[in-house]
Image: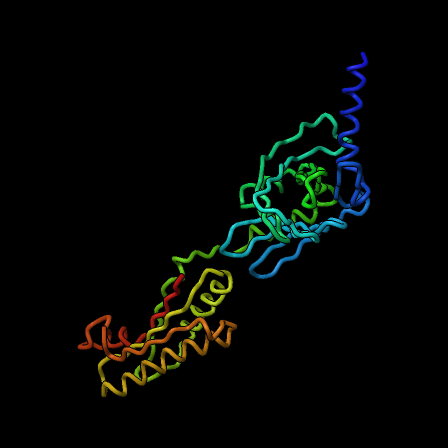
Length: 295
């Protein structure tokens, strides 16, 4: 009987300790961080190319789910006190709130702790799992030994309350993000009128799409622009015209916010034609500029 009472007491105390509504609870050998239940505030924001869902944890830091067009969903937890040890690991569990004591704990496994101010960084699969747990009203909770001297057990909980309306907006934002693939933008071919270096409306539209992609790809090393002409006229004049065409593309991209440091320009004039210069159609195809993105 004594053993049964002791076990029951432990079952009651666990959710009370882990899900206490007072922020930054500290007990002997234990530190727990969570927003007070009456003040849980999830926020979402959306830009044309990014969706963000965030939650502030008093005295601890900010948890953020985010996805940018062309990239996968991710989660990060930025903390006020930096993680000071390398190669630490934390345990991630989805805990039921105390009023759902019959619901089982979901073990989400061990995760690495990164040294610095962003110790928790999760990839898409686990990020989506956490969102699903929050949607069910669960409390995803990180637990680890403290970074001071490893004497205390630290738990950090994200409360799955006051989130559904905000989460619906966030999920709708994710669904509307454009899908960008590097292979779709790696090479762009632009064409020019005879003797001109003016960009057409069609080419400006293509470059606008290219700009949107470039701004989502931090791995881009540089942008290679090569200008060409047909073989009508003097070679020296054609070399100059092909240079003007490369420069026109660069100038347009810079006006759209692309860094001038990213560009490498070439001017090959009438060399390396794409088609025969014996026909009007072939010469039109040779009056071009090639834009290549390099990672």
